Image (cartoon, rainbow, N blue to C red; front, side, top):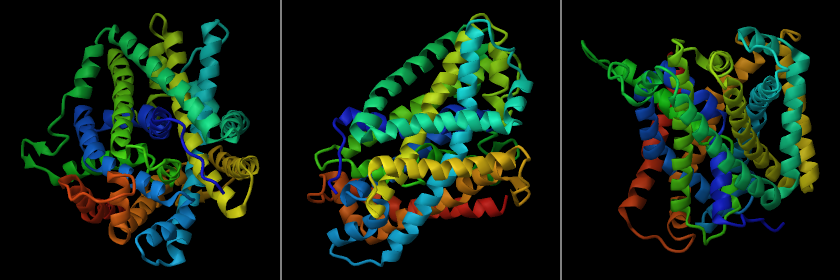
Length: 463
């Protein structure tokens, strides 16, 4: 079938940034920064995103552009362009990992997107004086109800499916051109409002001032264990945030023409992704510090601590609505990109129409979400290593399967088809210029990235 392409450079950048800018930035980044010393984590995250994340993202997009097909067939197609023959097992294993991650990660995302949508509706009701006072009991009541979570999760799936059915240009790209600027406006307005809170400067100082002890420079000397824990957490967040572990960037790259300036577009994606993470930190952490709450609350920071802050300040109902609208937009754009990777695969391999592929994928995902929620709320006694399915899948994908996919594709790109990738990065598939950039990128793909990924794997087992 004919491969569709992005209409504009801006549409591609915003859609790709929308995939990267998700729950990982607005929900996950602030609580990780709160737990790892604020400025220490921010500094390490930026270094990881720029020094390694940029080149991995660039390589994945170039891989997709060179293939112009789905993730299963892409391995052999790109190998042929370098006059090589590779086993079909490359595509089978890569496709299996990608689809596994798509189904499992989207199931976790749907649940959290449902929480977010629930808070959006609660925020609207509070705006008109119809809602309840938001407290810790609000979140525990929501997460303890199977039916309520399934309702909000189903609505999130339905919105995502409605957009995907319209296709790449009329659906994903068109929506990204609207939602991403709106997201930045909301975040900027919120960050400005939070700055006027008493003691908010303490949160800003925490976010932008490195804690050298958290980086391993203790009064007793350098502690490598502390440093490595910070580094590996920041690197894992960079991989998570940039959507590198599900074949998403491969698919978005496959919708690119040879004329696109890939290096410049990728730089913009990294910049936008990092800016959103910083702005989320500038919203959450100063608000938490202003009311002497602990920044180390973990995943519940956005759903318990922050709403409690909003309930205590003038105009807090407006800020709460804006925050959870931002969070839902971020969740939606990421969920769209995750589904699109699976939809593209179903369309190509099973010859399904876009509508049938979307409906098939969301139906499978709906069933998985239902099972996950039944385990999470205790209605189904299914656990993995003593964890309910929601927590288990979050750990499984975040610590194992997504890293496995990134490592697998990075080895293929760096060792099997590096010439094709470098050509598509440099001149859109034409010739290779022997520049320092190309040499550094090749070294990163062959050695730096695989070694760090293997260490990340090992660190999971020895924690």
